Image 1 (cartoon, rainbow, N blue to C red):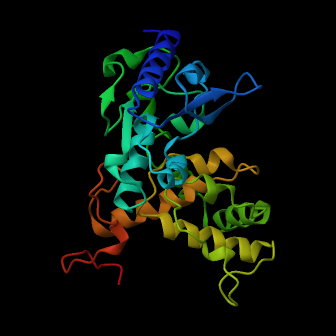
Image 2: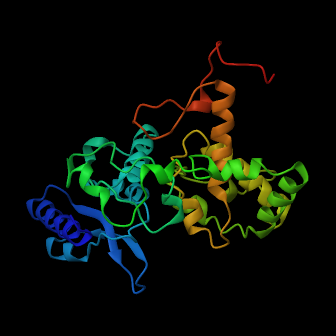
Image 3: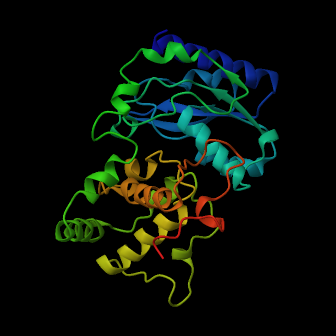
Length: 293
């Protein structure tokens, strides 16, 4: 099945759901005025379903935008790939969404034209109300294969591994450069599907929380604090890196937290695989490994 055929399926199904009143809106993607860019959009009328697109550039996550729609009282429809479904699971786990107020249209993903998609291991949605096409039909269209995802240097933690391989001095210089270039625009926080606090600590007017100055020292506080704050809830979607105007390796920093936690606990962990996950860093077990203490 071609991307064009998949796109038509999406439009037809969205129009039908809206016409039947099954949902008040469909959250999906529309084309922008730039050929290689799409944006998340809300379609609220059946005739507007023709705005929805599906191609190698439908990259942004849709789930983040459900947080605003929850206040409208209607049932929201959402187009969800594997990464979107992981975000939905985390939002459900964090009590940011109600499952009965969602209608999830699952879209097995063939991979997108973005570097962050290369190590993706979840091409098929984990949670959905209907699946628009079968998983095995997602093999066409310029994505990445399982072999690509597991290729040397492209495993799950490849970003963290590359930095860990540096010597101590080189690693220090690497992070000093990263924090010096950060402009504290908070785009990473705003795009992150698991950054769901009503008020972020950096916006609080309390002395000692976080300086408003833009310098390497304060940037470091923000970067490290955020990495630990989302560390056990991060679904590794890479939205933070996609929206960063400075091209900073934000996901690599968060993945290092996950990688270290796995090593210390002696157990694998991946957030968003279901809506019942406990917070990995927030639970304590007397049998936890403690060789590091």
